[in-house]
Image (cartoon, rainbow, N blue to C red; front, side, top):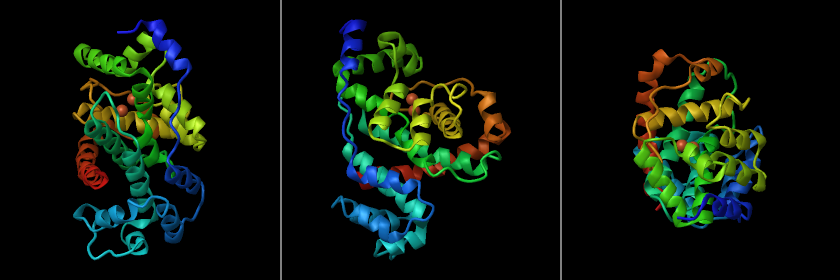
Length: 280
Ligand SMILES: [Fe+2]
Ligand SMILES: [Fe+2]
């Protein structure tokens, strides 16, 4: 395994992957107050494989549909936000495949966190208006792992194996080994991609939510912890024993509601599994 300084040197020359055009266009739509089915159709036309997949999903039991034949009909059935989030997820899952860890486990965790972010957001008393970037933030929160995977090669697989063996959070081992972590690297990637600030802050701050003054970071942090506690992890199987009470308070959520939140998280996982199946 390369030494720590070798890792740092390679991180200095990180070659950030380009964002899929669909993701760039969708992230611009996040800041618009009103998005139409027509705009979504235009974005979807950029990726030949996406429309059929979206319609298949819209017709599945998980998305309450049957007989949906067009994007406009899908929008009527699951809403503009629902279709936008599905297109975002399908595009990411098709574009980014890890080399040194498991694709299915990683994306199921990311999709599970994204769904759980929506569950928490709906219940959070301190979030009166839904954050447009919330689902994307959940989906992208561990994207830095994919950059490290490409940059560090097999060495990153070793770091993951160490985290798993030691039963410790991955970001701690990353910081010890090369002085930064996947949250920081993910944040830098989203800056390179010129993603909205709220999205970048949520991804960069998901392992330091009390430092990040960002409701989206709080949502992602808590959703990540709840998923990890229930074995919906990205591959290292780390289970946090507790969650931070300050984050519950910041969001206006009560820990006593956890059983209900977990039930909704599992319902969201059924959608995540349908998305994973549709992406392949
Ligand atoms: Fe993470
Ligand atoms: Fe995570």
